[in-house]
Image (cartoon, rainbow, N blue to C red):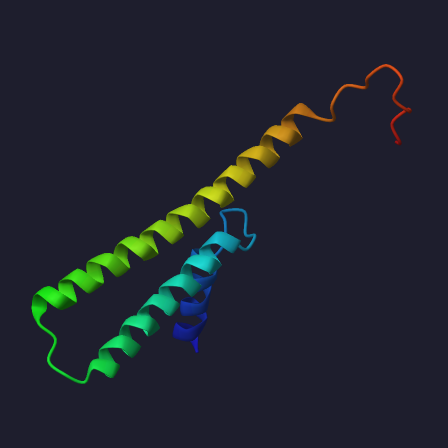
Length: 105
């Protein structure tokens, strides 16, 4: 059980941010990788024939570019959201304009 507990702790740390919150982008990356692996397995099992090395290399290369693009986009969106939130937290509420109702405290 110690090995299983350590493995679960490792997976939990891999899928969460340094502060311990779950990272949606990392979860989505795992889902995309699982989908791509299943897709490649389904395509190769459907062929039921000999696949040449250049065909397999081209397919894996294209699949790798697809998965990398999706993962990079998800990671970028997550980092942008964090940066936007940190900037908003640092700046505080916007200044009150003339004629605006008083802010609720």
